[in-house]
Length: 110
Image 1 (tube, one colour):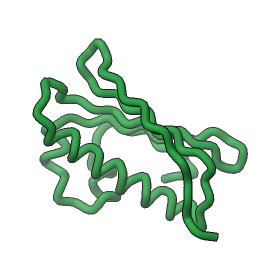
Image 2: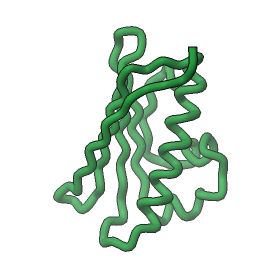
Image 3: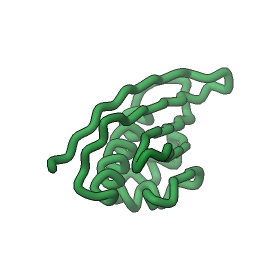
Image 4: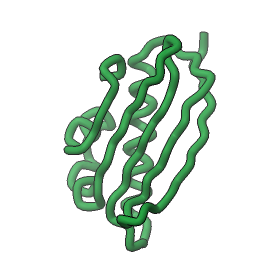
């Protein structure tokens, strides 16, 4: 089985000035949970860097990944800011995510 999935991205600037991005992942066909985790971490790091380098008044970003694995809803929530992203962007995606202070990762995806 090859790796594939579909996703839908819904960004919204909240009243507190934070950019909140909901990413719904659907139709997941993967070889392993680690493969999915690796792809989510890669996407997260890339999005955070892209968002942090955008010239805007928004300094805080939240990514909320929602998916269903084994008929159970799973979530990854990661929040960061421009300073934290800049300080850690030289690290690998997994180390980058580990270094961020505000995250909630479903046990199956840790």
